[in-house]
Image 1 (cartoon, rainbow, N blue to C red):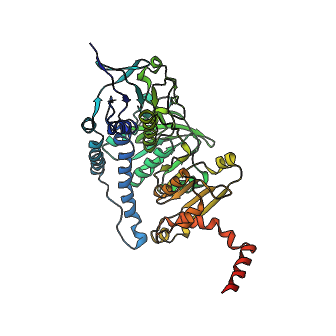
Image 2 (cartoon, rainbow, N blue to C red):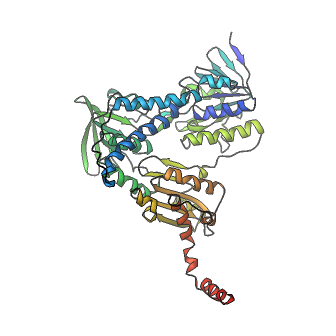
Image 3 (cartoon, rainbow, N blue to C red):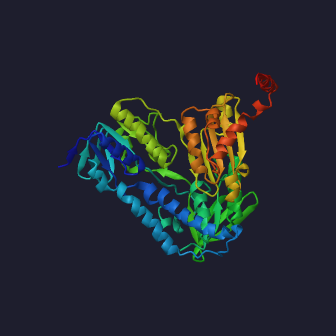
Length: 474
């Protein structure tokens, strides 16, 4: 006989989104059941953010050794111990894993069930020998690498982010399908670790980002020896000479690429096929579960958050969604997702960070807007540290309210935080102009850009006349 559980909340998925909901609800003493069929911590901890950033950190150290000559330090070419490097990547995962473990969540008062879930009606989920009838369900099942329909792929070995970090050897020539954030981050990391790297993209690289800033990133990527083929179709793929061969076509004609390893980084697909959502009356498609701005599904008892909802796929969005859902479930307070306040960062070198609408979107939505620009070359810290090219663009209304910002350059991911705060709180450039930035720091770039917006005031004849008149008063 099935064991019937009646928690207040049933969370399906133990990744970043689901864990945030479970921990938040448990903190208020609310009965919660958390269901996870795979590894606790989800994609971010095990296959995504954590291992990729640990790998990028190692690659950055290797590149710093190469760049030391510029500073008068002779170090030579770094020696890469890939086995030790991967061991450190997994050690970092191991250091964080206890925070996301079933044991920790049990200690918080959450009942954790390690099994697969499926709906059997609009208010009941079956999990192993349990039937869960909760007041509210939160679907946080995340996403998996999308596998493109390329002829021959099923007979060809390939890597995804779920298998890349278990690779025991450094690829000789890594061929990457997809020039989005993941594809370019891994391309640069592996190039810096000594691999040859070729990236193939059917459209434009980083197509969702500001083209002017993308150009800065791609210039740096190509300067490091990465071959990037944009607007290129992959006709087929096959095993070849112990590796892989891609048959491609673009405006210049047909050609092939031989590599030792193939990495698929062509987007992600939601994990909801096994949930039997139709039984619960929950609408969904290949992009994700259909939700409103309140993240509620077509079943009023169920919410979908994080990657499962088919929107912006970031760990910080998962946390944001969790807060919105808890606000509604626990306190009956209305909450709506605002994607315009969510920052996005691509962790290449230079980094690319954005928040709010881009320049074109802002003009379409708000009409007349101003774009304030400031180059990193005008920043003393960027010069002392030899940080290379960089640019900030701030989009504002005619009254100076900050609508969005985009930054390409060293430290862009940290610098965007202030602008994300400004966008969320409807601040103006006057607020940025008024604070004191420590010297010499990269944070001065945003402040200097803000000051430059008011530069024309100093040249205004009326303002100069007033200043001249005030001089007569001593």
